[in-house]
Length: 111
Image (tube, helix red, strand yellow):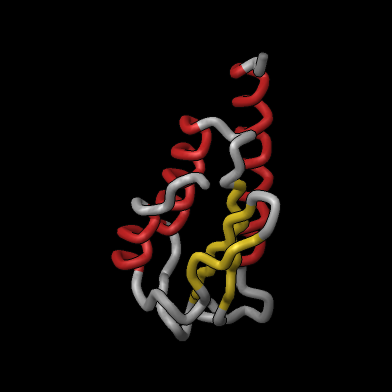
């Protein structure tokens, strides 16, 4: 049986690590605030992740997008889900604004 509390602690640790990596990725490297960034997010959609944690991950991604300027010239996002194999849900070119990207995050279900 899975200990949900331990699993949630592990997920929260992973989320904090991902958040730190995302923030570091978004910091300007040459002093330019609007420097172009590409950020790919990997999301485990296997049966080993319970539904509550999966939904929490999608909510986290949606909240993360709130802090980004999504546009072709500034920040682009891609989403890759994986089970036993990876699947590209959307590429860097698909969403050109924050609103479209956030709406799309509501429609991803576990496999």
